[in-house]
Image 1: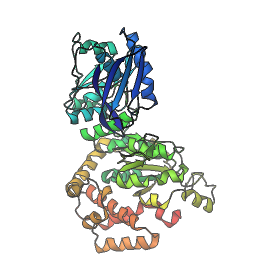
Image 2 (image 1 turned 180 degrees about the horizontal axis):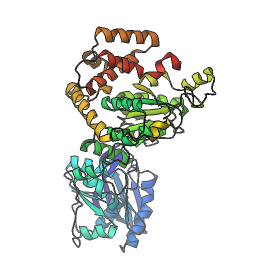
Image 3 (image 1 turned 90 degrees about the horizontal axis):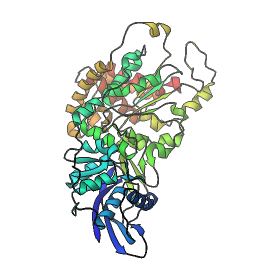
Length: 511
């Protein structure tokens, strides 16, 4: 007897439907064969499924069971097919009364006792189900919240195989899990850090506000203990609040990577990813036999923080160029090519020299000029050109640490940033972008015109510092953001001068 059950598989961060076809034929002994390009995890599912069926009290006759995962020319991976395969076998054996399951999608890994374990990529599958007009999703209980986030889809938590069979046979009611998406987003959007905790570092905080207001990349340069990491970890708190679409897209990436908590159906806070400097290029960009998202994709819609920037392998840093420019990362293999979203704000930190105390007023540097130059040259020029602001973060003085004066809270800074972002959206929306950091050269020429005084300042900087054409564009973008923070239509000379000061590594002092 032939029985069909609908399931889904994830390809990148997108899901596509899979039809699980089960055929039972008489044989001398019980055997189970899975075809349709299954990987090792799918092939091993036959033993899990048979044990789960027996331990749930279902009798398996001596028949030959053939399971086809269609379309058969697409590679299948993971353990999410356990539950649909078990339901298909029971349906073909006549143990399931419901004959037409075309409106249902089943997914879940089975334990040997028949309980249903969570799987990756459920949110992507739920989005696909909504697009295909499939309303009913049978998902593991731990994945039910993320599936219920999708509007127009009913997610039914599955605790065990026996429970699902009872529901299919009408002995138990179907009770979908309901969530309030807006309330869930609001509940998950709280941060446990605030810029008010940072003492001193007024110039660095000013530069951070400019960077976030315009979507610019930023580099912190300072001695150990000056607060570079503390500043960077508070960057997400002043980024604009996540929209529901951004939250769903970010959650899809974390779901596919298996990093989503079973208590969190939606990621409402901007991601902050801080990989160690020993990371490989595949770990940073993504990769594998079947490519998985890397740190740049996990930081999508958030912040990617690279501490001790010169300690990263140079070839690892160089692969950042494409996602920083395009907002996506493409991983090509012989049999496939996948594109992951990677629109993030890059924040990096480094010491000014190997010992960390070059330019420090309190501690003497022990590094020679050639040693400092070799240390700085570990970061390629093209990568530095893509970082708009280079900020010196000096050690905090004792008086600043003990003073009672409090700086602005993150909510106050965010309000100023949102006002500047609204101006940018009104100006740049016709061009398909929403912040100054993403302006192309053509848009820059249109909205970043300089007066004669500003032109003279820019010319002196280009000649004296030897700036590249890309650095020239970066200065104009930063100056445009400063004007937006003040609500000014035109860029003024003081904006250009301040933007030039934020190119520390382009100055002769650092060469």
